[in-house]
Length: 420
Image (tube, rainbow, N blue to C red; front, side):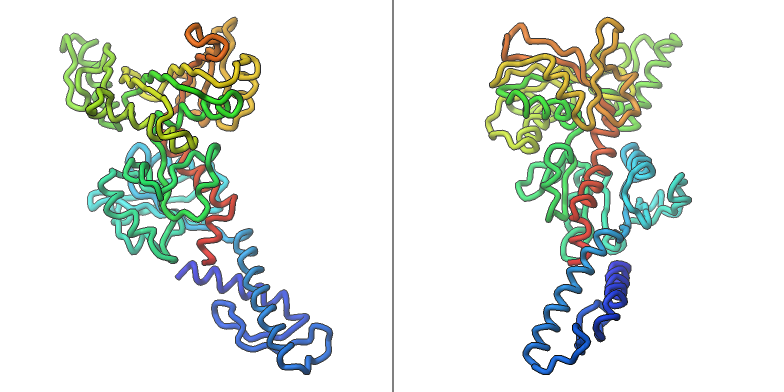
């Protein structure tokens, strides 16, 4: 209903702007039903010419209406799962975003429905019990929920001309060929015409922010990656287990911390195991990086990219060691320049001042830090090694989702759906 009101108001403005030249009768949606023209302040005698002029005017009015909407129409947004770690960050990112948001609605479970969430930009927001019909009233819906929930509800929210655009943070749709998997700085154009868009895995997003500008410069031939992933990658429960486990060991209460969330105790330990093991010996987390990097960057299905993922006892921000072999010889200064110029990347690479990427400096930051650039001793002139660190709750999840919406607002995709 609100979408129709926006279109009707835009049509009304078009009518007013044209009234000095011609008199028109419009329906509520702005479609011309009568046409009496004085384009040159003289009547048009020929009925055929009048009919043609009427059709031309109606088409021009609709186009003007669409353009006006694209320029001036604000949008309503919904967040499903805003009480979780990623959902909270989505709301925080929206508070700082350039998105023209007329309203933000928050949907939750029976347990959280009726509670309120305070926002510095959007005021006090009451959590509504999730309902597909209510979610469809929004222009854009962010899903910060499980893959099972997304599979059950995402398409029901987005299907049809009056459905919402859904940006899903789970892995449910990432590998479906008809669903774009998007990092806006790399393949933001894939959002055009899409009603359902997948957000990549956090490890993939952080690594590709640095890999993409280097790929454009030197053309990647193969990639080897090792990741060092914070406890918050397992959600609030993972951080709580690290906190309580560390306390119990330091206090002398226990010699080794208890574990329920992680496969082994995480305090004072590292665990080379994230997600379930696959038949090829890699974990699913490791394979996500391979599958998603190929899709996002438009690489061949057999492009060689290997990852080893390790959980480490830090709270936030994932780190990655990346080794690449390239088709073209590597120039270190050119690589620095490319990373420094890349949007969403911060070059932190001053060894004299002991400056390099670290979780403690990347936490809470929108940009992915990149540094420790050096030619590879293994691949020689066609090899490069470097280190990256990024806040996985931001670039790896919430921020990337909000940037997708910003890209759609920028390229007209949101307005195109609103005026369809």
